[in-house]
Amino acid sequence: MPAPSALLADALAAAAHDHRALTDEQAVVLLGADGDDLDRLAALADDVRRARVGDAVTFVVNRNLDGERVGADLPHVRELVAEAVALGATEVCVQGPVPDRAGPEGSLALVRAVAEGAGAAGVHLHAFRVPEVLRAADLRASTPRAFLRAARDAGLGSVPGTAAKVLDDAVRTELNGGVPDLPVSTWVDVLRTAHETGLTSTSTLVHGGPETPAQQVAHLRLLAGLAASTGGITEFIAMPSPSRPPSARATRALHALARLLLDGSVDHVQAAWPKHPAGLVADLLRGGADDLGGLLLDGELDPGAGQEAGTTLTREDALALADRVGRPLRQRTTRYGELAPA
Image 1: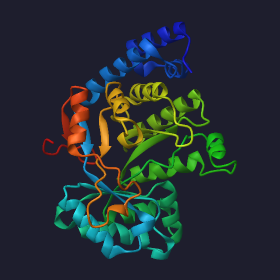
Image 2: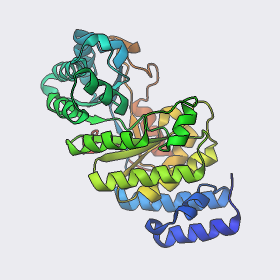
Image 3: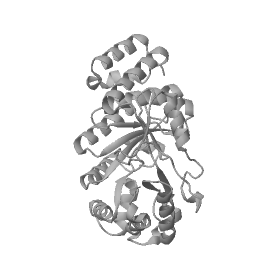
Image 4: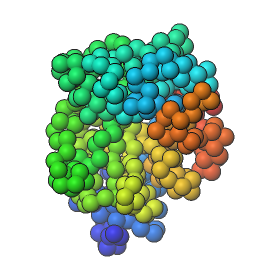
């Protein structure tokens, strides 16, 4: 809901003076920005983005695989990964759990199969949300730390920061139909452990549901603290609630505020192109975001192997978005390293 103009003027002035000194109360007010005030907030966030990471709009060439669908068919995994690498992918994402029928070491076997499929070319494997780390550790009767170390040694590069939803236990219980969900403290502990073993992670917020603006701010503060202490979070991704999508206004304000509150701890803010219309993606890129995420290649061998099959961004689409906001396009690695110009 839009905030009173006097409070917004004060909060915008504070953000312009020193965005790192914003209070939680000022941050909540900024989430209500609309009209000209929202444009000012977006411009401030874009200035911070430019100073932090420059002007390039980045993307990674990746392929998603559904862990439940392919996790017990390792020869097929090798074929799919080899095809993705041949198509130019530098990253493979495994979404969802590996089925229990794959056995106690099924998750580690999947990691090895991905590495074998990539061969000498190599590929970055991004897999295992916090609940999946806990399940894999339980199946092999080890600690999460021991599983993560073994997965790292087998070829895992990073873990998704999804399953965070909103990092507030009361909200998580409400979103889970009144049943307590994975506690926030557990989510944080596992992600911290992943960082301590040398893995990086993304971070997310699913917004537009029952959470309040204050809870959104608290979520961002928690992510900033974790990232500052471990250095392990590469990017922040805000995703709309599928049951109650937020408005374009609220989406723009959240991305801009995320850039301000995460500055210095999380360098990259992603405009998740599969979740928003192209016009809104462009607005997010003008308001603090610098990254488009992955192209989500389907390939021809088994186009339905990923959970988001049929949702693909071409390089031409990515270039059109970058051109729309007057910025260069650059392909990146998973950890935002340099690759040849796109």
